[in-house]
Amino acid sequence: MKHIFIVIIFLSSANLAFGQEIAKVETVKIHSKELNQTREILVFTPQDYKQKIFQNYDVIYVFDAQEREFFDFTHSAISFLSNAKKNYIVIGITSPYIEKYDYSRNNDFLPILKTESAKKRFGKYSGNASNFLKYVKNEVIPYIENHYRVGIQRVAVGHSLGASFILYSMIKDSGLFNAYFAISPNFAYDNDRLAKEMIHFNYNQLKSTFLYLSNANEGIGYWQQWLPARNKVYSFLDTSKNLKTLHYVIRKFPNETHWSTFAPSLTYGLKRYFSYLDTTKTQFSKETYNIEIKVKVPNKKDTVYVTGNQKPLGNWNPDKIKMNKESDYTRVIKLKVKSPVELKFTKGDWKTEAVVKNSYGDNIMINPKHKSQFKFDITGWGDKSE
Image 1 (spheres, rainbow, N blue to C red):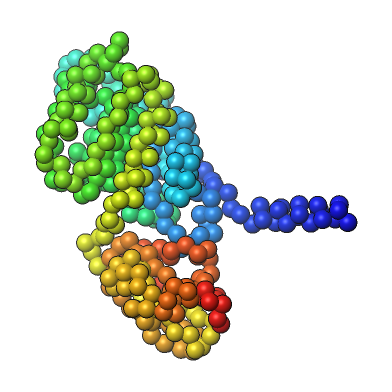
Image 2 (tube, helix red, strand yellow):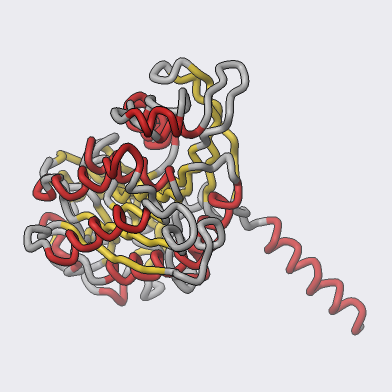
């Protein structure tokens, strides 16, 4: 009998394991018109992504992902640093050396250089940052947002010249990302060009932006020009009084090298970012969207309320927004909402919170930008009533 019990336990565990979707990494090829090249991106989707069809996921874009360490460390660290409370889609944007064109990552990350010393230093491996930014904006991000269930937060992570590039992107297209993790950026290239652009940038263009800057021991013993350029930026940020929409964090890692700093620096930065998110109010879109919500109910006598994260949804009051009876087993309501939308259903109080098929008890997230009609299937109620 003891052996039979062990077998039953094993089979139950196996069924549970096979019923649970694992996290995945896919490789996607993009035939870029902006670059006139074919590029690969890496796409990490978290555990149960396909099963939790009513969940949207914010996206982290990791540059220099041809070095898999940057991409893999980022998507691996999130769960540990958030105590398994946060899930992200993570995109690895690669900048490999392409022998056919004699084209390198520096071509992606550096703009057209102006000074003779910079031209001599980088040679022909520079000058395509503007097109690379168009590739990211017009091809990579739209691909992700058209093929995956994304939230409203876009985060950029870069190291070294990859970090320089994401700061360049903030200056050239301030609305592209909501948060920037610039780990050991080079502010000094082209006669402190990026440092000067950071100082003269109009930060009033930004909307509630998180900026994380860090450095290792660059400028101490090697790359001497990095230190004064970096200090100019740090000093400007620390003394400026016109950064109302920018939440910035600066962290120094003097005992780390340029390479070794990525892991401890990103770890620290993500912790600060998660704390920032926890204390920041949701930023809703300016646009208003007309939507229709329909639910199938288990009992034709059921009264259904919808509640959610904004005024048209009752601001999470469970008995404020009553749905209309369309038929015996269908309830419907039309609303004007802003993005993002999170909602749940009740019978009028939280004890009767609806059990919705495929929601797994989470808030239901919908994207009104891409769709106007939403249907849900209520299978039961929190008070066990039918």
